[in-house]
Image (cartoon, rainbow, N blue to C red; front, side):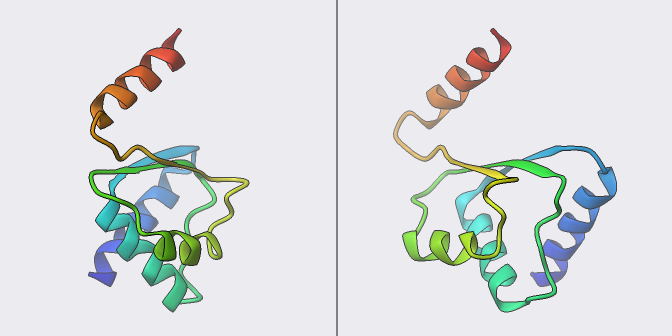
Length: 97
């Protein structure tokens, strides 16, 4: 699985402009665990926003990941909830208007 994370992070980095990640929470948990375990692995500076959802974010995983991610440069949105799709639609419409 680590190869998958490395490949995705490398691809995002190669894009070279500000990027948005929209990931399932489980994938985010595994990614942040890898970031904590492997000090040489880091989230590309080009990621400006990461949106996670689909299941409850575990506080201990979020705290561990926050230590390795510059939350000043990368905003993290947890969109989990019973009306998750409504929130995303509202956010999209708000940004467009």
